[in-house]
Length: 105
Image 1 (tube, rainbow, N blue to C red):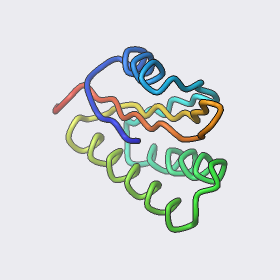
Image 2: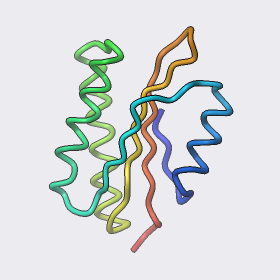
Image 3: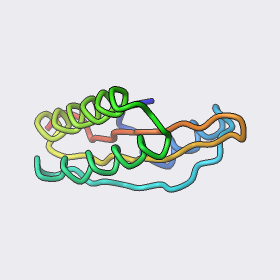
Image 4: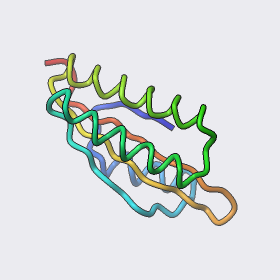
């Protein structure tokens, strides 16, 4: 799931954990200041997609969507931060990708 917004990461994180009753593990925060910051973000997203055993097509879609959102955040908001987490509720596994910005520059 990809969420965008202006909320502090801990508020979104708490809300999502309560809503989905999932246990979060392996949380990574990737700061976004320049276009060069998109490269490590793509790498982190690809690693999590592999851990979830997504198909190559789904991995590519997820990495592409995340990097486009990140580039838009840098272009229009100036900077931002992406929170990536693996989620597991005991029955299902999934991922969280939360893009946080302060809004338009």
